[in-house]
Length: 323
Ligand code: PMV
Image 1 (cartoon, helix red, strand yellow):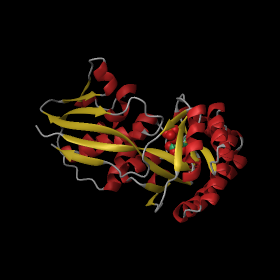
Image 2 (cartoon, helix red, strand yellow):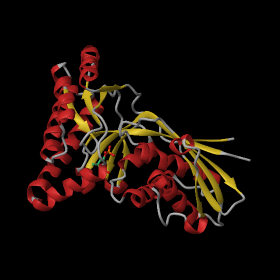
Image 3 (cartoon, helix red, strand yellow):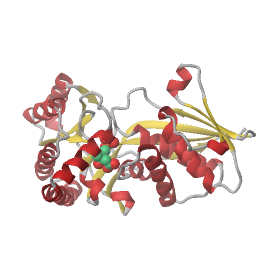
């Protein structure tokens, strides 16, 4: 029996979170935290899904093809959503087995989007959809919206295209950014409740204060424009300023936490040229700009205030192998 395995990386938001949900650009890079999905076509009329957590309990999740995507279960929502979307494009119904794998702790670095993309790419090969990169993005992004309700799609684009990207809401622009170096260190502050909660919180703040919050989004958009140039030119002093400015505006949006702030101030005090939270806020990760000579004290500061996450950055996007 032929199996199709795809492996997709996680993401690290560099600049522009939250504003990217409202039509502004962001900059994102990939992290070498890989999630895989193995798809095996079967002679059944059902989709059987296993994840590391389900396997640990000796369980599988099986859904009849006729019911696929109708009632997403939290543990398998992203996988089932992409299977339902992909099978809608298939010429004939397919029974499938989908086994996903990945790290136990993913630090909020994009494991849901990575598992969706890995499953999408494996299905693309397994059921012969022959989708382009762009069509794969559109398919995986709709599945993420099915499972999660909201999101700009930046994480889906990172997992598909790889490297460092300029991304605009919904993929209206997805452009590679030529960043010669990515001298960033990642600090993990502990789990957050949910991305959705913080995206909703910003939406409510915007409803109460539309003019001010729109101006904050515009300013963040302006920071992203300048950050792209600074990143491409290796202008670290400028990039550090822009990180600190972006952080101030994220704090204004109400998504900072004491644990993130502690990591951010600790790394700045240890010599980081700039530091900011990364992602929706409320927990998860922050990122510090650490040139070689300041790296050791900055790593030490992160270890003291939280967890140092050492992963390669700017890695390639999803890869499929057939066995
Ligand atoms: O919490 P994360 O790392 O999934 O990042 C969310 C980033 C947001 O801009 C807040 C939402 C989005 O989909 O762009």
